[in-house]
Length: 407
Image (cartoon, rainbow, N blue to C red):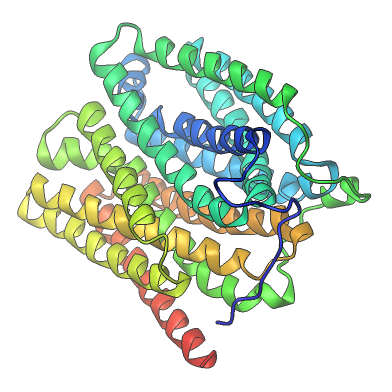
């Protein structure tokens, strides 16, 4: 695919020449995505505590996870393009306030209703923020913004899962402590956003942009078609680790669902960050190919571990799949962003994240339904894994055809 040169809205100097104010804005925006995504994965190792206290089933955990993903989807569809019209700063201010309220709801939760309400609010704020942050990073510095857009969501999930596991294992009152810490962090970020200057000019049409629109500019459609399959498959595998991972670790390997489940998700995300950094100078198509094969090999190892009852094999699969997730996500983002005009960035990234969260949410909902119908969790995992493998193979096929068409 031939790359077209797209200038960011703010002329980006080299790394050495980037003014301090722009550099601070860049890192602030990256930190928002990182912390928002960390907040989304922190509850994963805490769910077994809620389950023991409130006596709900594993199906309910799947439902809570799916509620968050669907809330992100709804927010992306409605608010994903609005920062292209009103600017990045107003969207981030509202989203950060919503995150603080969500942390209060979940930290003070005394039943499922509070927990689900907090997750809905968390999902809505995350969906509004990720497209605005992603576009803002590219406004400031396009090359580094592309890397940050890939690293921040992946590393956020790793930090969140690991932090949640450590807090559950070693600190008192884990269901309160973790949300108090995050609430304090979001309050600090809110103050920084208040002091931040805008990175993009406003333009008319903000209200019209709130009408859900799942459109992709003509020049981006071929790249998005290929990237969307990679996004869907990679984030479905991330959802597999987050929603089914703890249950599998408990039922198959008889290990702590909270600690080991959180470590598995942290391993997945951490290897994704390592792959992004290792392959950042490679062409986007190479990154995407590497991602597909990593996802394929990792999912196969994870499924094989369930047959041989090997936790070592399971974690090896998680490690390889995470690297594939990171490489594929970065490659897909680069393929898409390279063809976007500056005023299309937020809308285009919202479409990319819709594909991601559809991948994370829809298979998890189906898996929850299967469990509710009495299907064993191992059987559900096998069907889930087979579907992911099929999607990855379709992505490889699409990438191959697209590459040949560009020759």
